[in-house]
Image 1 (tube, rainbow, N blue to C red):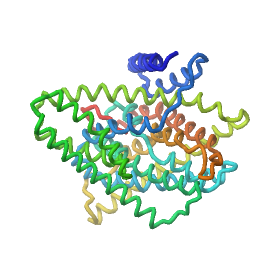
Image 2: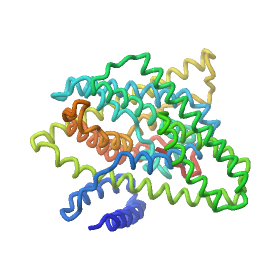
Image 3: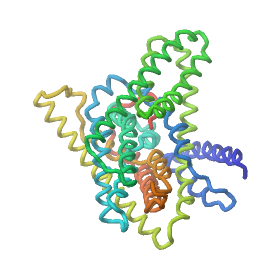
Image 4: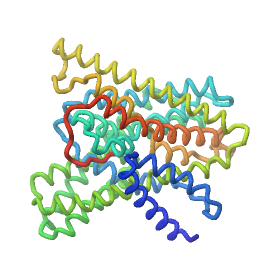
Length: 424
């Protein structure tokens, strides 16, 4: 089967299953992932390997841009304390916790390799959470926190992964250097996003009378921004997020309603196709990766993956409920800028905690692991790390994906969000 035929086949399956999921009242990411696993075992189908560079360039920029474009700036600012806690502090904490568990649990997992696994699985994927809970009436606060977290945590995870790989390659880890590099990456990403956003504003002033050209520039700029930032060795993720926030301000002030509707319609189709492809591709990777695992190690590795999943989930739940208490205490004492609107209740905390699924970024990072070390020796335990990462991704998406809508309905979160939002 030729490549373009496979792509058409997968797209057709994705669209059909998405329609079926609505009829079956089943979260469509779960159905698509299951279908991807089944398709991957078809004997006549060639191996479909996922190129990490393609994932980061084709999937990540538009999803991040769309989420940043739609998020409420005021609510983002109000809940920034919680967002920052989850997107930065919890990412580093999760990477460390998984590293400890992996080092003492998995044979042959040295500290550097354990931190590589922890970094891969440190960031959550709000694309899955938002796709699964679509139409279930999440509150504004919950949506803002989940999407705000997803806008930042990918950058934190990628930086953590970069340091972990360097340690696995034999480079000494120096905390102050790592902290400085993290700041430079983030600040550089912000500057690139601001610069491209300003350039886009100038361009749109010139071409604003031509709707098609205007929309085309808005579609193109996330990819340009991400590529430019990565070429400058700063955070492409942060650069795209800043661009999305700036473009949203430009759109609200200058664009007529007709242009907004045209742009929204195009973006809805793009995001729908990208989301669907992501979940099928995640499922497709399992049969491909399992071939590299010895038969007697498949079930032990699956067990390790489940344990790591539970550890990450418990840690996330503990952190979000601790954050709830911290916010309440800060508000009572009048410290900081914590307002009443920033406070969390049990219902929001439970949903946010249970939405800690891993997804396409974790999968892409895992598959992108180097094949060899600096001395041309094979990367130790590479197959085990990749396989366990895929198990965690699948387990969180399927098990938490099936149970999340039930939890949302059970707690009956007040307040609905009328807009269809996406995130990465």
